[in-house]
Amino acid sequence: MRSLTIAIASAAVVGFAGAAAAQAPLTEKNISMGLAMAIMQGTIDQCTKDGYKVSVTIVDKAGNVAAQIRGDGTNPHTMEFSRLKAYTSRTRGQTSLEFMKLTADPANAYLRQIPNVVAVGGGVPIKAGNEVIGAVGVSGAPGGEKDEVCANAGIAKVEAALK
Image (cartoon, rainbow, N blue to C red; front, side, top):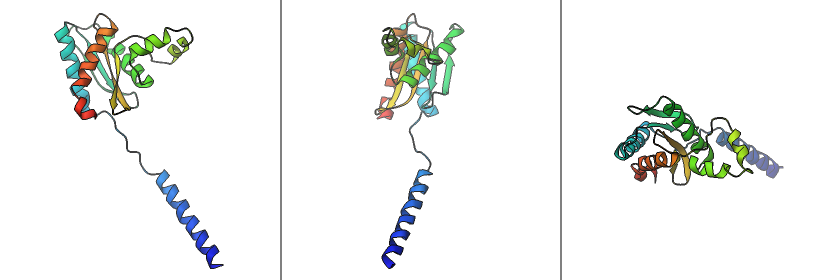
């Protein structure tokens, strides 16, 4: 009988411990404001050097805008377009240029129906190790490939912090 009582008590303790662990808060990596600002600055520096006027958006792990800046002399649509590129990249975990190439295949074209995704270059995921923690989107250079070069330059500025 004593063994049965100990077994029941042990099972109860394990059960309560498991329930308590399931209620613990999550700990996850995400985009900080300092990180977002540094990426935006590196991105704008590269595009300015290349002669392009761009807007830049950084989205966090959840795909929400963490920071956004409209470059001097940019067209009005570049703010929203940079957000869509960043969101696409965060959602897919790949560059928006890779998404464009993927959905060029008619078998994958249905993926373009996902709300707020765009199939054009300029969005790049921000990774801490192998984990996607956000994305940067750039709009305003003459072509998504050029936008992507600037986004990669921005991420390169903070590469050490993402290890």
